[in-house]
Length: 389
Image (cartoon, helix red, strand yellow):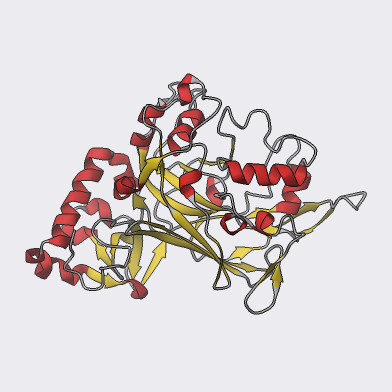
């Protein structure tokens, strides 16, 4: 679909995308807009809807699929038909002249562990004498409940967390800054339509509850995590910060990226069995200090987003408008496709050599990580974060 706004061709942010965000021109209040090329369109004047004057997507998420589709259709009409340009153009703001914030209020946050390659890599590191997959991994999408209050928008500095650490060589734990700070390149899904407590969401209806997609960097303090996670799982090693895109890509913008998901053997239980099993063909990229160090492929994820959401609610747990669930680290079969430093450096034994000659096993203070992703002509909003002491 063509667009009359200059600079949209090939930008990844054309009328087939239109991601939502919350922005503020200098000296003005935050409000809802969509990104088009290198501009942000203010939705309040062009749609004449005061709902978009609020500093959050929350009310729009709550309206549900019919309103989401109506707004998307109207915006595509306004931006593709040049007869609307005189009325719409005054409400375009240069992207580099506005501030951005977290686009919605994150409710519950659940993080999964859905890449078979990632799970097998960690299994080989930490359980070399046994099967790399735990007995349950092929039967259910493993996950944990995170902390919604520490989800932050792209560009937020990440302060190195402190906690208890106990290397195998030490008899007792010590408290201090993490020495094994890591990244996890993930894809997140923003819930719009809630469900009722006590009523599981059927797997074939799960994606009807999802408004959109964001990239996620689930920062991980591996040394803190290793000491605390037995027997209950991730806690302080994960909860200090999770970064997400400022722009939420509508699920409708990724229709062309839907591809068959990997075959599952053994076949999952009935409540996880999809009639049309689909994943998303997203090509992720991980950059460290400006250098691409990994290109994880999301299409190979073993557990699909629909299965994740169905399992999340299988016990009757409800989902709410604004909930976020993430895929877990995205990794592929080759070293260049691993989505975390613990895999890329093989738990620190094979450090990466960067272009400046320095090496990295885990993150150092001052390091900046950028996640990006492409799905055909659509570029997902990047996730950027710099480590501070």
